[in-house]
Image (cartoon, rainbow, N blue to C red):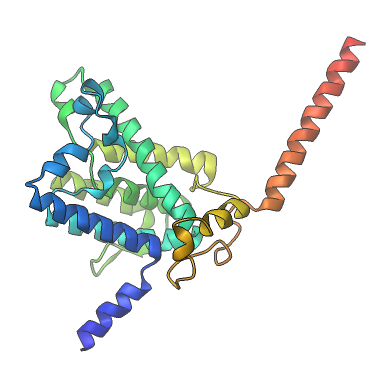
Length: 268
């Protein structure tokens, strides 16, 4: 009973968006095993097939496919330790938007990278991008860039590393498991852009927009759950507040008005 109680307690501590990822990834893995890897071969991002065979759907959801139970377990363990913290910080709706948008951008960068390196060897066009390794790596990179000396537990292992050593260690391990993981290079490139331009998180949605989605289908049936992190529960310094958004628009309007006045005076 104690073991069951601990499992229940762990499950209840996981946030809603992260639970969705765990459940959907597990379902996709089971279906893939039942179909002898047919789903994996159809949905993972393989640049050669994505572009030359116009199978553009491969850019959309390869993160939910892992190939086997071993990859599924390692990938989701890494994702779990990063995702819960991110979802609690930014909210469930921005988290959902983030994991799908980030994946799409990473896959596009990955395909471009593979085609750029294909002059070295054509085999690189047949490499694969799959699982939640990419998004996990971005979350690790953001933490390393913001809190590089802060120690954090390394996945589920009983030791800690400083945040600045976490990404290179993770990158090395992932390439030992599956070589080459060029999609992690694409993820690192995106992480630097996100850090420089968006302070580490791109999906800074307005409070009004997030609230509207929370009360829309299908989230309106789940937003009252304890594990669903609403915009009222997060630190609003991470979310673009409506007042700040209006102020931003006002400042842009003032700038435009001043510029037009300067142009009129120059004409006179």
